[in-house]
Amino acid sequence: MSFLETWREHDFESVGRMIAGRTEADVRRALGARRRDLNDLAALLSPAAAPFLEEMAQASHRLTVERFGRTMQLYAPLYLSNVCSNICTYCGFSAENRIPRKILNDAEILAEAAALRARGFDHVLLVTGEAGRVGRDYLANALRLLRPRFASLSMEVQPLEQEEYASLAGEGLSSVLVYQETYDAAAYGRHHLKGPKADIAYRLETPDRLGRAGLKKIGLGALFGLSDWRADAWFVGLHLGYLERTYWRTRYSISFPRLRPHAGEATTLTPFDERDLVQAACAFRLLSPEAELSLSTRESAAFRDRAFRLGFTSMSAGSKTNPGGYASEPESLEQFAIDDERSPAEVAATLGRSGYDPVWKDWDPTYDGHG
Image (cartoon, rainbow, N blue to C red; front, side, top):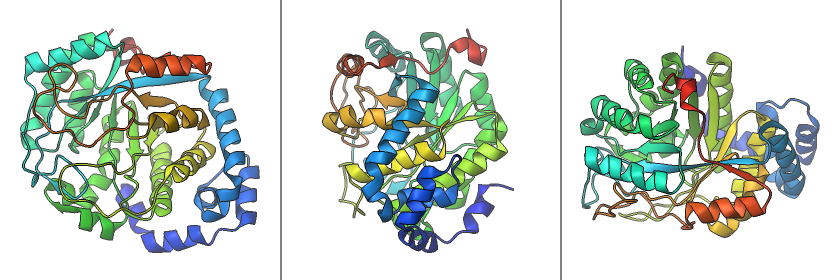
């Protein structure tokens, strides 16, 4: 049994119509509920919820402060490679893009680590394209190099087998982010044209393999803009609920990435603006007071400075999305263009002026048995 079976029980277009049919009464009922379910999530994601966005935002802020306090975890992505075997319509790393490719060697990994430590980070997210050359052995070596230098290490790479995840957890890996991109099978096929990522079933079952491998935190999300964002967000909620029931010892985080400019041909967007992002984030906070919500540098500084109070618990800062981008800035392409280009110190100072404490690590390494 895996989430794949649960996903197959729901038709994406039917879910979209169900959400579109929610009423003002449904929204009021969801806002008044003590514990919310997927029916409530549908109402909070619906067009009918738009007039209630301020009320949703206030409730989301209140729940977040009650659970997490006025803190914000800061992290940075460390791109190890932009080599990729997939052809995806929305990504600068797509195999068909004729760009300089790079896989960091040990010295370059350590140089990136030193640059990030100098900026204050104690939590990094290791990111790669999806390629066999950057598999378990390469990732294990990177973790061994970085484990003494950071309190917590996360990873966003190609889906792996359960045994590989368990092995990497033994090397100090704490959490893995694996975005489904879209839960719409038709749209998934249109945007994932070739390579291992074209197998939607294997990707859908990745969080199950992570849960069985005992990872301490699993990150979920959809790439909003590939299909109907409201239905995609509902399926993220369906996935989150399944995982929380099945792997209840694990923590969960949700991200809300939007499509950004990238190399290659332009991708056809479905509408998902800043107001939609706020609605989605608030809906998830009201659904799950325990989930961690992340806000990335894909968004503008002005938007992030307004939105971070509305339920988010972590933010990237000073991000570079190309391998070697912090230390040497080689001629390797970034995965996508970021928007908020402020330094980590500037982001931390803004948080401080708003009464929030920036936190530079996820948890102490002793929690992973590596202290």
